[in-house]
Length: 116
Length: 116
Image (cartoon, rainbow over all chains, first blue to last red; front, side):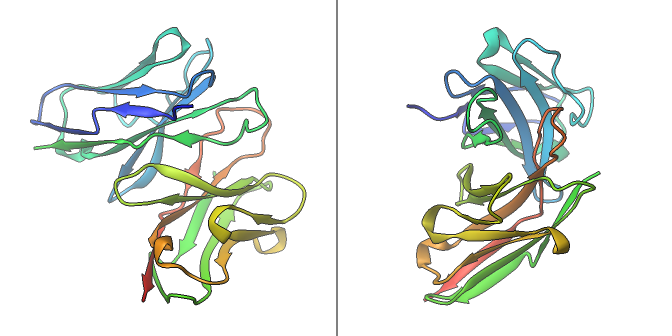
């Protein structure tokens, strides 16, 4: 079975542009997380989706960041008007919240974002 | 609020020597505890986890960790280091609250180097 996939693997953009990052979770996994990994801040939680419930957006650093999850599967993280401090690796993880491994998050390879 | 402290951002060991990576957590109740490994340009892979039950847990690649409630610690060990163990290791916690989004709170990471 396929793992979590993310695209693109690398993204270089100019300051002020918008970017979209995609995450395909493991089929059947009901919950999805986005994290950011940066040199200065380490690994930080951004947002969490669980089924049809309202997402937990408590980790989003600013209103330039948003995310959606369509059909309970694919998720897109959008960063508007990118800034240089947004440069980081964005990691997606999914979890089978109803299964035996309900507390185990499976991570994708990440998208490395560079804002020039 | 929870926090995770990993002592030592860089650890070097000789091939065949004991690996000891330290992790302490701060939490009002014992959380779920995890160790993840990250190889260059890859996502996070779960090494092992503690939820309940036996406090000594064994993981993949010969690693194990012991949960010590009195010391609020979850140190990672491996009896004999291999060159392929060179990677970055992250300790993480999830609050055992029975509710919420179960997002991981990570330590800053420890980069392990193995010297031939």
